[in-house]
Length: 271
Image (cartoon, rainbow, N blue to C red; front, side, top):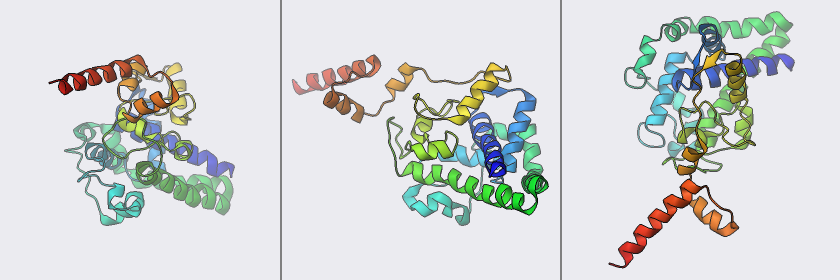
């Protein structure tokens, strides 16, 4: 169990911090050794190589829940979860992420991807024999895939949508915990470049905590964060009704925006 949890966590941050927040969205810059380690761990997870992974994800953001989205639940929950893989997809980094084709380190891991996947089975076997191979290799990969796929399926179907994103992305706390912060998916779609997905103190985001530690150590820098004012400006309209019902005051930015809309509507009604 320790081997399972340890390798799951390490390969998980390779996916969430390395593949996703660092490579795809360029949410921070990292020391070359850290960058190499994160992309190596992401490759060991065994999903796909970093260039392919990033390109597919950029395409998802470009067409989220519309035609062209590789894995939207519009086509069924099964399709969003992993049916899209069997349907076939052709990553287009020349369209979705041209910089990936100039990233020598990402291209290196694309060429050597299968070697890193194999390492993800060799290491647990060396640590604990066949039992290590079973739990640290096969079970770990099964959980990693399906929890990550849940971001595509569950987090576009069930959960909360505090921000106005124009798609079906949601926040789902259980996926947020299991996927090391990726389950705060509506937050992410509202602010794709943010290195922090858990925008509230109670939204557990283990990946963001690791980034903060690396930043404190001076190993990553230019970490992208979203100001409270910017967050308030993107709140979905239902929050206004919620505020009126509960008597709680909304942030000033939202109150002023609502006042401007109300004033404009009143002027139109008097004409």
